[in-house]
Every structure is written in structure tokens, then in C-alpha cells.
Amino acid sequence: MILGLVGAGGIGVELKVAFDLFDYDTAATIIIAVFLLVVLVEQVSNRIRKRLL
Image (cartoon, helix red, strand yellow):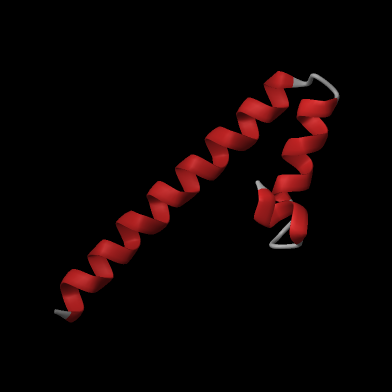
């Protein structure tokens, strides 16, 4: 979240705003979306790495 607040894409700002407004549904959606994106990128990265090695 700190990186987003500093300027690494803005998702951290959206998450902070959701928490500040007590909009926990939106905050949970953002957290789940980021988690799923990280998992997806890791899977793709692993497959590419296996093909290269």
C-alpha cells in the first residue's frame, strides 16, 4: 500500500480512500484483485522460466 501512496500506480490510494470511507466491500475487492493478479503473474512467470530453462 505504501508504494501506491508514493506513486507506484495509485492502487494504494484507492485502497486507503476505501478504508478511510469505511467502504470495506470496495477495499476487499481491491485486495482480492491485487492478490489474484499477483498469483496470475507468478504462474505466467513460472511457465516462461520453465520453458527458457
